[in-house]
Length: 446
Image (cartoon, rainbow, N blue to C red; front, side, top):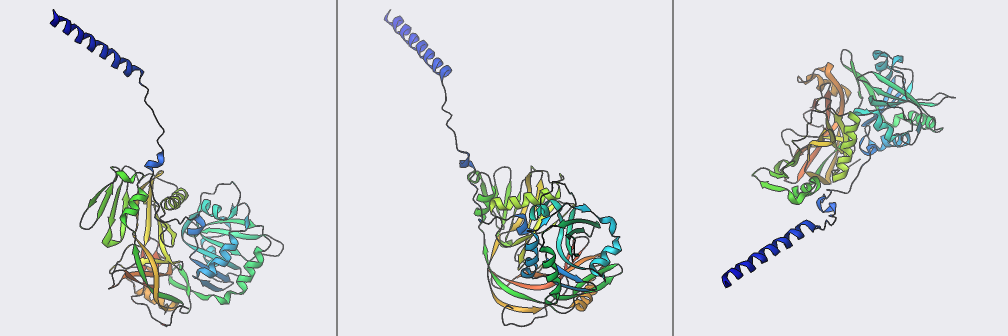
């Protein structure tokens, strides 16, 4: 009998316990305290530098055309004087006036013996008008979907507004607007009058139907050596991944790999470069040129990617790759193919609103030393070198321009920077013309 009582008591306790736990389960209210999302957004920017479009979209050359005479410069201090004035002038409605010029008339007006006087800014690639609209004082809501690689300021006539022209040489588009600022005509006239302070340029026919303006005499640029500092791969991990604490790292002999299961960051220490890829993003999706450029600037701002002076350089219409090139004194820098230290270009490809691929240098230029002045070949010498290049068809040359070449040296953290003439072809190829610079004074900077 006692045994049956004990079993009854145990059963009652089990039933009561079951009821108690069931009641608590039904009535349980979890405490959903707010979790600060910043715990999962621990991105740490590489640098604190941020740029607006006007800081990285800049002309690489300014020309002054005085009837049949041409003068120009690549020096940023001379370009910036007029460019900075232009950014503050009020611009009226833009209209398409392409019908006023045939293809030959447009070429003759810019590089030939036109009777007009004008200032011309040249860009390394086409820039969408919407970005110029964000740079200039242009308040109109009218949408212009075209892109332009030149801006021209014709000498104004008395009693009329100063004109500004946006030109696409490839598409033969010319858009015109009026500038209402009273001092605009005076500033433009003053720069034209002082044209002889610039280098004289002459037209050189390099192939039938292909005429380029090149410096008549040798111009001087500087060669230099720079100390290099590398950015640690961990810094890019913290800057690029949304939640870097959950990123796995794999060390290999020639590369370090970071992944969060979706994106992949590969660091190549010996090549001073990195590549960031999100394979879930479709890079083949079409993205409008202006949107891609804006998003690229914002992306670099967000993670502090402006580690040196970089300017927008081009956008490949086929691959939709936006490129920003390293600049020294606003002169573009290319890597030496045989003595490569590292890349000199930031490249970004988008898939809608997310990064598909991102490639860039892993280094910073520190201080320069051992400067010397170099005399660049004159127009006749450049044309001779151009015609000797069997890899270039003269009728396919789009432009010839000065650029720096960066080479590795015997010292592991030192690079050499030397100036050369480069040619750009219509197919997007960049070719160095001369094999060696001419040398010059070694008594320091000008």
